[in-house]
Length: 39
Picture 1 (cartoon, rainbow, N blue to C red):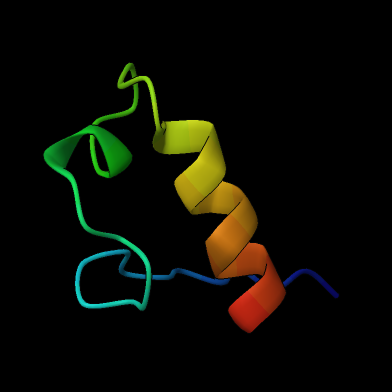
Picture 2 (cartoon, rainbow, N blue to C red; picture 1 turned 180 degrees about the vertical axis):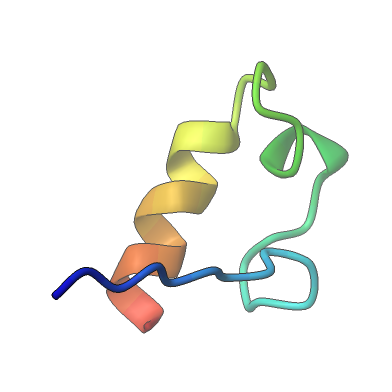
């Protein structure tokens, strides 16, 4: 069985910069780490 989990980064705590939301942004990997820890 496979499951696909989708998370919207906008509105998550500590996501405060547009650079968190752009895949090639400088802070995107940080945002991914935050989302993984919270969810």
